[in-house]
Image (cartoon, rainbow, N blue to C red; front, side, top):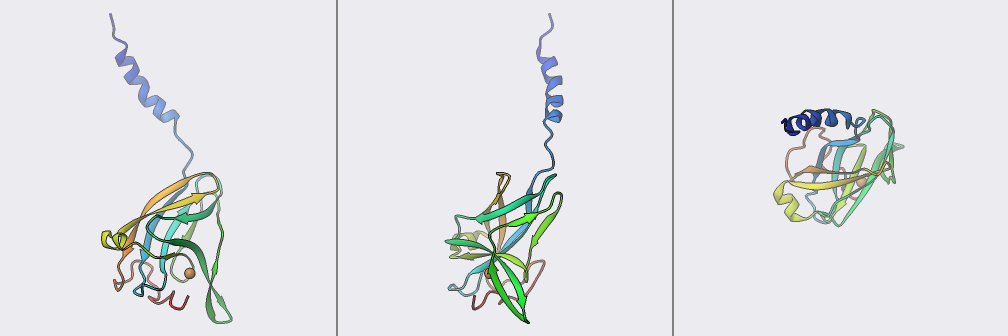
Length: 158
Ligand SMILES: [Cu+2]
């Protein structure tokens, strides 16, 4: 008498293939530059990618900072200013880059443990219901700028 188990094990890979989802929304290249001044906010950067359909990034959360906001640096008559942004649309199969000099997140009261550990989890909230948690690399104050660079004092006087 044949045991049913070999038949089941043959089926399993087929089921996995059938479950193939459309390309997901995801976030990568997340990093936080900690402000050298405890009283001024730190800045965070990342790249958000949409899958097969357009999606809107609604916000970023973390339990390793007191407050997080999404901002955009804009040049108004030669003066760089920062404006809060509520949401960011990402086109289907496209991406939006948060980078020094442009869109960024601002973090107040970054937890010293996160600085010591060199990483902190960020939760990204999307309009399709996805909540994506990514470990951002935390760059200690005074460290050389990571890929992307930009002025170290971007957020002074904010
Ligand atoms: Cu800002």
